[in-house]
Length: 261
Image (cartoon, rainbow, N blue to C red; front, side, top):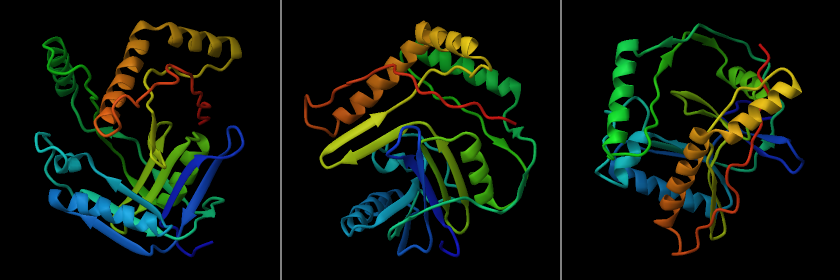
């Protein structure tokens, strides 16, 4: 076990419902981008490191979008770089953290009035045909102390997700839990598994099955799922061979076990 874990990611294992939790210690190389012009250079280094047989873990912020399209409106720069990457040698299976942490109550950073106004504005843009989807989120803050790695360990065990990650850049620790596969490249093939439409788990099998069927028959959720599939298909079509993009499966179910508090 490395003395200090700097990055972890999970991925589906060979057995059904089994996740591999892979840890990395000291990085062989670290690089980042602070300007739009540096983002593409960062991605070129990613390809170089991967060609050497190394694992590369990193992050790309939403604000880096202007590196590929100057038309995107983004927030002013934050303390995070636009992109940050680190290259590692072979990982090891991670068994968990013995550290401790405390987490305070979340405080939403948006007032009810601003929230409602933003929803009304989003709906107006949709009705006007300016956009067909708005991913509207709000930020919450909470007090935290202790070991961020232990927090990732506890969260990823309570709600195991196939694509989770922990990244320690030195200045910032990032925890990500996601059921979605954004992009996977295998040779010359790209694949993605977006997810839309959710329903809370129920305590009994009958109620759980009823919730699943209700979700399956929901016109809104099916439309949302179709919309994100079309969006990803169109995006892949911009970089893939014409006519090669296909959707072998759509609207399949993915079950996440409930978190026991």
